[in-house]
Image 1 (cartoon, rainbow over the protein chains, first blue to last red):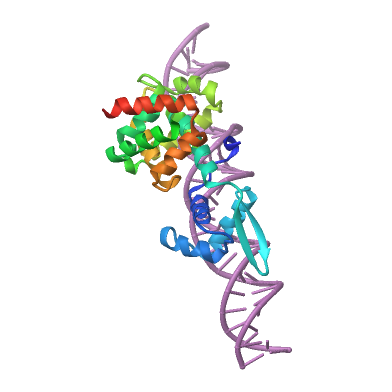
Image 2: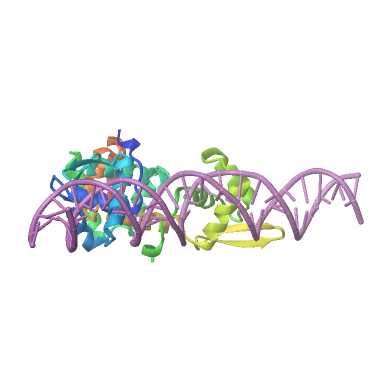
Length: 125
Length: 125
DNA sequence: ATCACTCCTCTACATTTGTAGTAGATCTGC
DNA sequence: GCAGATCTACTACAAATGTAGAGGAGTGAT
């Protein structure tokens, strides 16, 4: 059930994004490299976040020798779907007109809107 | 600039939603009544949130006699637009295909998707 | 065996958030 | 003008979050 996926705080989400971007098996160093560009942090900070993500069930941690291998336990697609639902409900109050207005009224550019419409047509046919 | 609007924690957002739902002038009792249904909390909890929202610039507090009048300083529309942008960027990594997939892949129901497409067509013509 | 290096676990601490009690100020009915 | 009701400001505290240091344990070179 995607509805059971809780919202991650910003920092942890960035770590998950990095994890989702990697090809398994993923080691700490892989994540560190990706995060260097988007959100630099001390190595121990990264490790703290990984531990917390493990406790929350977003990833699994397995030892391979002295190193740990981090594997997503929630897919990026499921997370995005769950969070878009929750955004729709909590921020837009479950109102589609409000959601549409948020997107066309500043959330997306004119060009992005055009592309979104196109993508939605395609997906839904 | 809608881009400068920071994300509110869930509790404070619920209070703002109640505030946006009211017709001015809005007193604490008006908010209390609305929140009773969605998110009951002690009166002092509500006051704490209102104070914090004031500090964050989301509303203004004026004394009218011994009572306070609360007025939104950020419109619901601006907040929704800003947060939808930020959702698009932080959760979907700025990828429209990802965003569209999140919506069609579980974020919205089939029927909601149909309506959203319709609304977007209309808005954008 | 030992030194240097690497990797992770534990601990720590400030800030933010959710929640609410206490107390002081102000009406209001009598 | 006093008692009770009402309203807000101040204070408090636990949990979550962002950030990172200290230290122990494994590994490789000498």
